[in-house]
Length: 492
Image 1 (tube, rainbow, N blue to C red):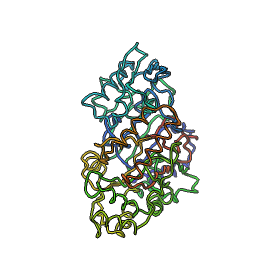
Image 2: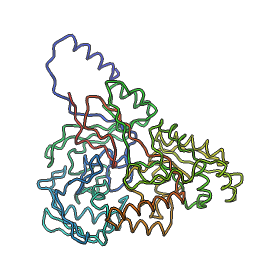
Image 3: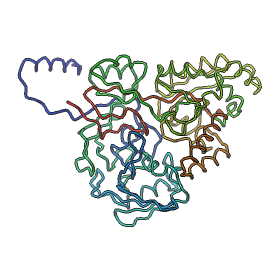
Image 4: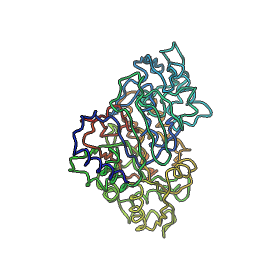
């Protein structure tokens, strides 16, 4: 018997008799589009990892709140030396990992030495490379000394890449994560779900939820059915094409906010013909950004002209750098030696915005002579082919990490963008703490990426959550990757 039939039968039966009042619900079932490849955020780049474990299972010295501000985490306080190179952290007392082992400064030392070690698989080791030494002062005091100033250091310590792990369990965190957070890992039914439960000895304020189940539902239609049937209680990022089903329905709350997700037509800059600036400029002129936003996000996306979030105070609007101009695109292709255009592949992960954008872009590129073969891949294959092996021409993806423009300073990153002038700019930006100077440098960084047409800048990904109307405490915006459970609660 189907679950909804059972539920209807049971409701009818209960309606005929008096029943005692039941306790307020404390569990939640959340639908998410992608299954994480692993559950260790210090060993993988996929946002799907942080959606499940960030601030839930694992915690860092600091944490990022829903406004993007840095808050105390496992470090309750800190001091910074006058030269900005030495950070001394006071750690929370009475903290234990989910296996019962105690947390102390030695775990902090282990975590950062692991991140910086020669065998590190941390996706963003570069954020922490300026850490010159980690010194244990006493069990609840640790000192991090930097080789140079880092303007975003406290924020970077609050990323999923820097959550604190224990030497006893670190090697198994990919499959059985053990952290210090308010929720402990229970089980992972691959292809189906991950279950977390409230960790009773949690050192901080106990969450209202007792249990959270993440169900993997890639298809928007299936997600819609699951929401309407009550099989899930909500999702943090629902397909915009079906939002109208829930808008105005009193049983649901629709939360529309912003994310850090720059959605781009990522380009293999090391591969011909994309290593030719004129070709990349031609592709930029071929893109009708507004048409892509209307077709792929149903108007909810925000246009971007470089790799920077529009809500960032350093943002500058560069959407007019290469305006939609098919004639200019054809002329640039001819100058580059492709008067009849060329053919290329476009690998698309299983995300609605990517596959819808891909169809629209293929049509727009065809107008200027660029013929695209659309190749749909599963996310694990995308990570292997595109992100790891750089085996691609073009792809579409949202880069959801905050202030991740520094990726372009790494010539080995999957874009293959190698510009020493840009790399020097990023070094200067990372080492600057004065806000006015940081803004000037950030604007220069954005302008250089826009001029070089490194990627096709499409739109800032919106966050469109759909939740049971009796739930509260969900983040409307996503200033950092994750779906933080600590404030979510049932109101009745």
